[in-house]
Image (cartoon, rainbow, N blue to C red):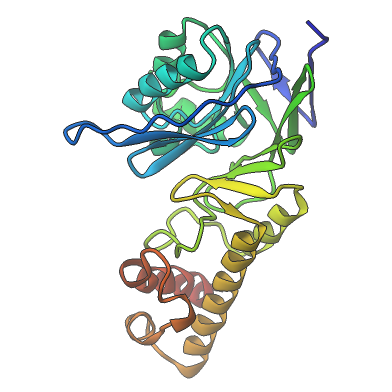
Length: 297
């Protein structure tokens, strides 16, 4: 096997070497039973997969010599993901588990994934995620063995997985994943494909959020898998940036007019995004989240 490199900026390592190798794609395997959780594995590129569990997406890069998983989602999801990994790469070992961020609805399940695949693969996350996870003391969500600050690269046998911290967004420890050879990225929660932000934008860090969004476009990808909903392309990121820009301008105008938070949430409409997912349900909450930040400045 070729030499393994773990490269990054200000990286703490407390685990065995991490390897990743060339992968092979297989057809997707959707669930069909109505009384079971809905899941599906979709081939995004050669050796690059999205795993959907109900309304959450995980991500994994597989190869005969190694698998890197991003976001096991939950213990049940992790066990099903392990079966999917075994289906597409029967002999591959789990090499690493990456948390996109510390939130439990995405990061839970690493222990179950390790057990199902019979390995003690290291967990990797941004350094700011570690204390939050440690404080929870949840056996289903083990704290990271390896942390990084700005960027971490996992490379072996012609396959590369890059972990990027682009700035605070939804959490202060969000990792965006890039598989450069496949030109595929994975981004969770702070971006999605033609969907408004989640409810009242909890744990969004402003103004950093607006600075982080365009940095995603500095990565070299053609396809981007999101933590919720269908994959997109570079244009889907540009549309998200446009949405949040328009939302901010509308809330700023409401504040300048002297509207209260309730009045702004009731009156602000962005009709050009009316066909987006969760527009009716979550747009008022998006207004409230931005209103509170802008009003507090």
